Amino acid sequence: MANVLPSQLVSSVMAKLYDVLTNGDDTIPKSEDNFFSWCTPAIPVEAEDFDFLSQGLTGVVKKKAISAMVTVGGGAASAPTEGSTGSSIELTPALLDQLRGEDTARLYMQAENFARLVDFVPDVARADNEQFARLNIMNNEGSLSDIYRHILRMSQVMQSELPEETKKKIEKFRSLLSVTKTKKNLLDDSETQVTEPSPLTQVYFEKMAAYESAALEYNSRRVDALTAADPRAVHYWALNANILRNKVKAAMNDWVANGYKNDYEQIAAFLDQVQQRDMTLLKQEYRDDLEKARITGLASGSDFFYTSLIPGNFARSSGWTGFTFSSGDFASHSSSTYSTSRWQAKGGASFLGIFGGSGGASSSRSRVAYDSAFNSDHFFLKFEICQVPIVRPWFKQAFLLSKTWRFDQTNPEAKDDIVSDGGKMPQGLMPAYPTTAIFIRNLSLSLGQSAGFRSFMSEHASSSAGGGGFVHFGPLFLGGGYSRASTSGSTQRNHGYSWDNQGMNVPGMQVIGFKCHINPKSPAPLPSITKWV
Image 1 (cartoon, one colour):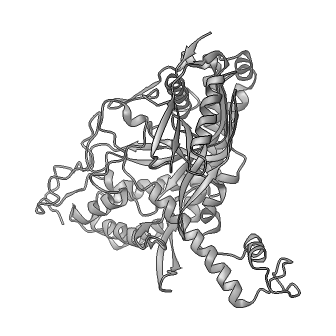
Image 2: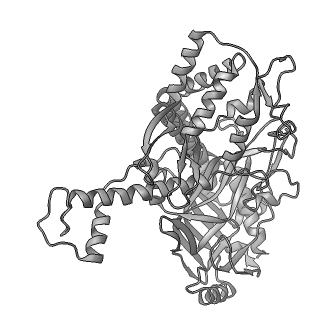
Image 3: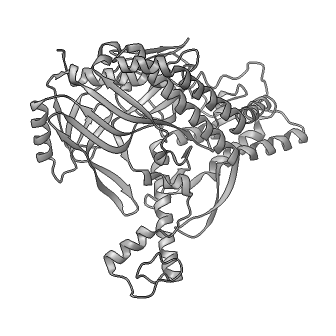
């Protein structure tokens, strides 16, 4: 029997998860993005929080909205009219407009909440590894969109001129990657143009997500077999490795054949190439794209930049990968690392164990840790996991990587700025940015017979009743109250869970963290450039 502390268990769990998400073999290459910023605790979400991804920003009349009106107000007794969904409410044009307006406001609020959630720059500069255990954000320089806007405003580009034929080709290719749509501002009925991913871009990222899902399943099964956590995992890999490998290859072939993989990447390569010839044109278009993605928030009244996840139906899809951690995984995953020529990341970090809190998860008034040891022989954790690409039509990484721009050397506010110094612990305005959101759902945690844990949970449930208390295991949210923003202000949601003296079950969905891209040195202008504008 091995007695281990909760902090040791959660660090080992996260080390295995890190292996699954980043490391590879001859079939699956290692992930280029290997830095993670974990939410501690995770952020509970619901499938309907992402309706704006599949429905867009235009509201519709929904049966449950009508049912709610009937329940609350009783409704006007009348024969059901066309589109009345059988309710006793007469759906007059005015009422239909009201319901569509309310649903539109809900979708805009969802879009704002998500855009602000991922509009951050992770802190990667510290060497104590604590950044892996918490969602550390560089607050000194502003949000990701603030910094990107500063870069475009304060940059100089190489002075040159492209032929008219090349300019037309650029315009054609850019129209294949993004589209501009007219959106109505609900505050003043004004119309604005918003840049969104084109159908080609959406299909590209959908097929990429399908490939990554197949790769995630392959890696998960491979890691289970390598650690020999149980005979079943070894047997499964021995018998089904070829099937899993074929699924990965099929997903890659589908990405190439039906996801415009080569077309998308060739277009990106072309645009990157022409940047060596005329950056003034592209920079202006990039600034236009940023402005077209600007939306004014309904509740906050401040601007945000439209950001999405692809595929938009991920929350309700069945293509999630199973993840398990049992007693046999503990010793083999006490630490995991990933190394490149300039960066080394560790999977096992200084995570905290099981906590109870009062108040909202973002600012709990008190925290009490369960620090008694568990019998690791009886420990078992499982959940489903999905990694979803973050798409920002307004954010152009190609500009940051180009060697034909620099910060304006005549402007004292910008001449000493740097996006990233490219160091092993990179520093700068934007040393990294989040590229993928990591979601899990249907979490189950088994601890064996533990009277101490049962007493801890009973005391926590009693002390936090009605106060928004929550419980987490490292970055994994185990249930309780959580504050959420809405059009009517901040509201308290209770994310259900069940527990006994042996463990917990948490059926909901949650964001546990973000995979981040580490920027190389930027700007890194060519020394041969002599004319800047």
